[in-house]
Length: 376
Image (cartoon, rainbow, N blue to C red; front, side, top):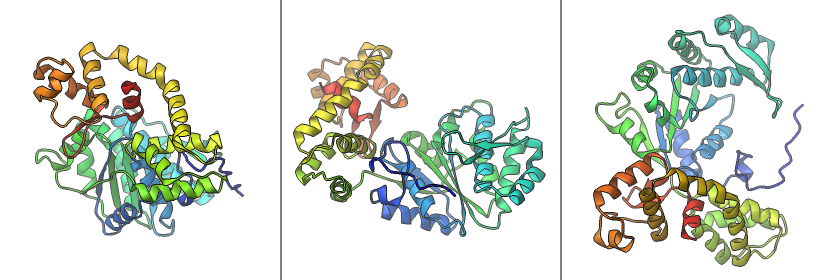
């Protein structure tokens, strides 16, 4: 019998702890659930650290296992069809053996014996996990077998492919066309294609010459409402005999523009700090400590960028948001030179995920802690 996990800090920055420790997103969760239930695939787009992965995990946690199989696959570290297929297959097979049963084991061996699946306990969680050995030149066959397996399942299968934009970088095959060809034949398997590179995801699903053109419901998620986040934070802090005023929380929230990952990081440290009441001075102290810890990383960024790129990155950080980087006022204020050079540097830093272009067109530093570090 599994023992209940002890939650030492309710403000998680690494994993999903359960609905009690998840803030809001009820509207977004329902929108995703309605789409999947009604057989629509979804493209889910958000910047990093907003909380798309947590939302997917929150959704999957809420779906009764008697109603559907929910499978999450992180594609961030994949580089080709083999990596994709291996990640996907291992996620599916691990899901099938959790909890372990002899009947399921025998069925998997019967169907996937050629993949030589190996099951072992996860060294961290103790839960069973699967690794497979895909034979060379058998990647497409393996992917077909896994999808066919899901298609024959007794329940609907909901598959989340996180950091989906990664497949656009594969060079060994036309992955978008390959995957689209398989997916359009499925009736029992429905997908969430989640990604953080907005411009790449938009191109993949809205350009007429791309395989996934207009094949999904496109959904964007934004920051969590400040008042709801305050109620969530205040409740968990109060359980720890800590108080935070709405003014102090507003200061914290505004410092990182409401981005969930950064709000959580600060709340995690404040909870550990134990001070009460939590005031702006304490928040600034914790933020300064975090920025000090990140200084070596950010100094490395400085060495990897060109002098011009660093100059532009620092200028945008100082402004907070730049809507017109080609304006004479901006170029002259920071002595940036010709706009053609600035535009090229901005495009490069968007690709490197150092800058982000918001929906309304403004440019901001992607990493909110980096932006604060640059301002100092």
